[in-house]
Each structure stands twice: as C-alpha cells, then as structure tokens.
Length: 148
Image (tube, rainbow, N blue to C red; front, side, top):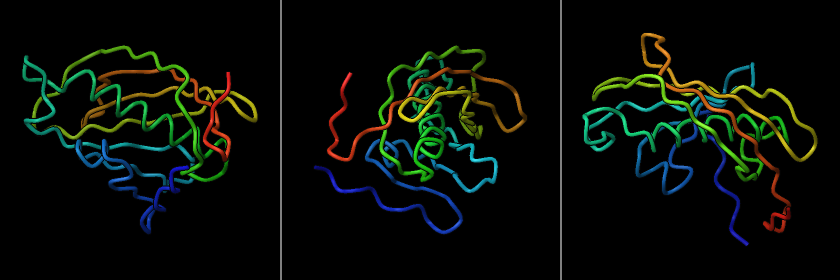
C-alpha cells in the first residue's frame, strides 16, 4: 500500500504532492475558510500547445486537482483524504499565453458519504474565464482498492 502523502505546508499550500505536480509546477491552496481548493500555475514555455497557448491537458489537470482537493475536504474533512476521479468533463472557453497566472477553483455541488460532485472554473489573473469542469469523485477505502 502506498504511503500517505505528506501534509500541506503551514498556511495550507501543498507543493510537490505528486510527481505530476512537481513536473508541471502548480501549487494547491487549501487554506481558505470556504473549503474550496485552488490550484495556481504561472504559465511557462513548457506548458504551451503548438499554438502557443496553455495546453488543454494541463487545463484539465489543474481543474481535476482543484476539484479533487475540494472533494477530499468534503468527503473526509482533510485535504489529503484519498479519492479517485470517476469522471471529469471539461469545457475550454479561452486561451492563456506564456507568463499568465491561472487559478482553478473547485466547488462542491453535491454528493454523499462516498461520492462527491464538484464544479470547477479556471480563470486568469484578470478574472477571465478560461475553462469549466464538472467532476465526480469517489472516496478511496484505506486498503487502496476502489470497487464499482
């Protein structure tokens, strides 16, 4: 069974939680009293698609992360409550160039003890909407196995 990930830094900022997060370079903020997680990334050249804009896969990753951490707090009270993404639907609205800072916000919209529904928005530093998402997340049992 994998070891439990390290706890967030003081202030509720989670850095390098996973290899993917470390490679891409985004931060997770779970410090807000509204219990909505935020992921933030300053777009660099390695984050761009062939058109010179933030890659759609990275957009989906930021939304999945913000929504997932929000679901973790709703399902277990702890931002690091283990869960899996059951589904994530993403709508791309606008592009963002190198140098822009973008933030994804996850908002719990429903669910129960094991399943959580979350909506997400990705915005740039000027508040312009770049993408939205709807996700379903399932709490993972302590043994790490997820059953249908």
